[in-house]
Length: 319
Image (cartoon, rainbow, N blue to C red; front, side, top):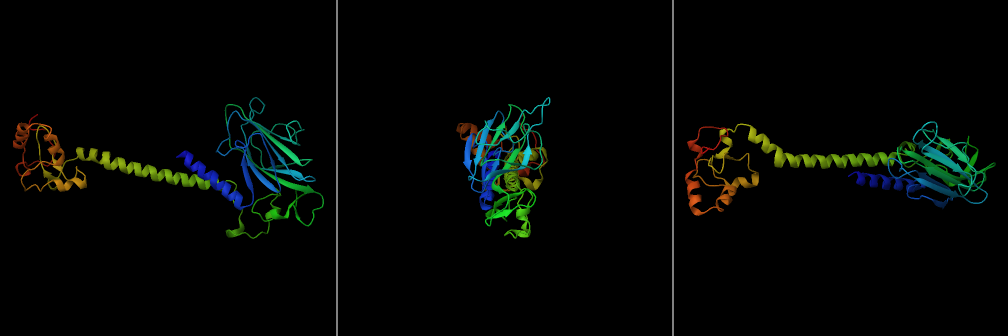
């Protein structure tokens, strides 16, 4: 069950990203890989709720020559420092490999609120390393191909971050300026022009998964009640006279045959209490396993409902 809703959440996240024009990757699936980005691209640490332990991966992004890589950290939650040192950490390198200099001054770990990083060339490498214990939600990065300085006619000038993004990213429902200026004043197809939360797909997937789990548990509970629990309740309460079809109290059957105890599809096999005594299907099958002499003896042991005054279960009269 858990696997089913997780697959649904990942699929929905990918679908939303494609619809919004923002392609998506997960580092645990794209470990030690390189990617050319024409406009923007999203990278998450894992396709699960928590990132994987004992991980060592890099992800390199290159853009067109003359442009720079603008990294927007939308979510960042790693394990906190242990004895003053990061045990799970991210380093951001200003180039095509981990041999390049780092943009961050020290390894990144713990919880860091929305930040940005800008390369000096057309490449950037993210390196992620985790230990064997402890895991958190990880990171959610967006890479954007940008230029700095004066923006040309095919670009949009971000207000406060000082970068120029492709005009196609203006009003894309994704904040690719890091100050949301590219989404200000936009008119969207969905109501109220509200940007979808980055975790919307995961939340929807969790809700659907919980709903499916609730339905399955309810059906299982109903099955257990129908086939097991209600019969236990039946055996503990007194019977009314109307519920008794024919009391067959023999040394083979120490309880009355009733419409309550047997399921509806077998009730047609019983006669009214005023009729001649007969055996229900279960008892008849039991008798066929014995010789005819035993069957005759059992038949003579039957006591009809008219001869019994009690309305509760009783032990065998042959006990």
